[in-house]
Length: 155
Image (tube, rainbow, N blue to C red):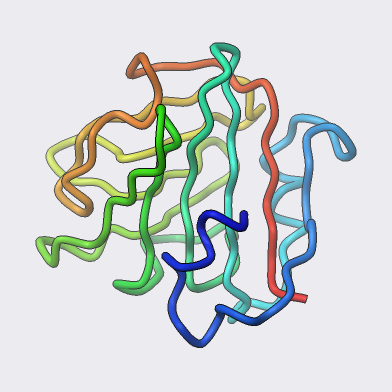
């Protein structure tokens, strides 16, 4: 989280973060993740470690929640720590920032691919190059297994 501080919007640099959801505490459930979210206007930091010990995730300017369509702003970005921090910002090509329902959480999209996606049990996910962020795959493989996942929100 400290490494990501300078990448966040300046208005958030000095704000404290608190853990809203953790698979270690709350189990593996997308529904529980949605229920653990903060206020709708509360920025969220999604951190993932896969079973290959790769760390990556997404920042959303609003809470991660279930929705009927994409939401978010151009402040949304994807990141990877493989091996050093890489940040993938909005390209302006589309507004496919965040979308989630009971079966799938998606961040970024375009041409049938998602920058980051997670299944309903938060066990499997994937990452592909997408138009929203023109990112590399965040994990070593396009599909990965989740070992740990956390969501942090502003305190």
